[in-house]
Image 1 (cartoon, helix red, strand yellow):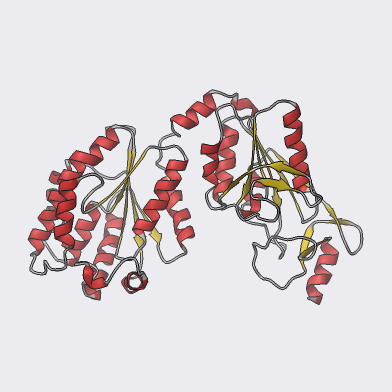
Image 2 (image 1 turned 90 degrees about the horizontal axis):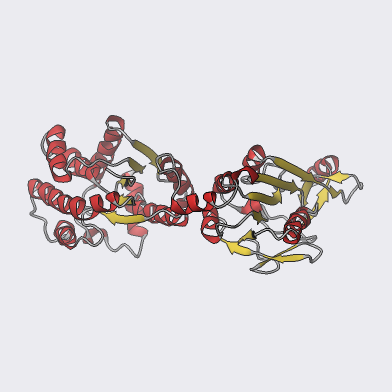
Length: 414
């Protein structure tokens, strides 16, 4: 039909579909994709379908028969697909839909016990004109947990205000079982556990979505076409606290300035020690930088120009795991990407995304501090304070650089 993609988010009540699909919309938009976010029953800018939605959700319509409910859903969907979804797909957009046909199968067939499943699917196919999602992501959650989320959400309203939220727990269990059975039977389904943190669920959802995305978008192609891809590479500068990582990053960026290269420098919003729009070393050397949310590294794509040749990123360990993919995509487009960060956390474990960056980099520079105990090369950051928070920004009053031997002795004493 088109270069567009149709992605559906399914799940029981309180599974977090709306939250996740909005996060997905934001990430895709940051990547430069044209996105339409819509929902069922109803639909974005689809007034007829929205009017039907109001009837379906109205808690006063207690006498609505299962057959009436089914055909109202299908009437809403027929209008939604023809007026909104197919048009957007023909325009090459990524269509994100909060519920679609699988909800009809789960709620009206498995939970209501209406008709044979094949019969419901046949009627649904008539309503959709045979349109099927390119990907259905099922956010799986125990009904008790999901309904508790709704009752605890003051913005959602009372359970009794929605005809489906107010159903008995047995109904919701049938819905869940139905979804899981569909995931086994139907193509292009992925199940994601929805009880994890919002951020972790988002990461797992994104892993499934990115597999089916069109090969980048017009903006990414524009960026690639306007620079030589044979210059792209990833350089990692890593080491302990006080090892000179940021100094080395700034040294390389300043060499780029001397060569009149087009550059951009970024830092995570977690780093608030000196300035919101500047990277500074412990010795006070600085350079202007762009502050971006640590959990949204893909924002970098929208903050560079076609002529950008070099990108620097400081405190890279604070970014979400997606930073690895972002850096490699930038390098693939012909950009020299230089990142600096701690390779180990205070417990001497690989810090955040740093291992993935080191594994995919063309060049890795391990810089060393001076051990404050014995004067040898230091590659560990020993935390003086008693905080157990992995993400603690630090200075001399919080950390000291130690070699392996002195670090082990200090840990044993602590």
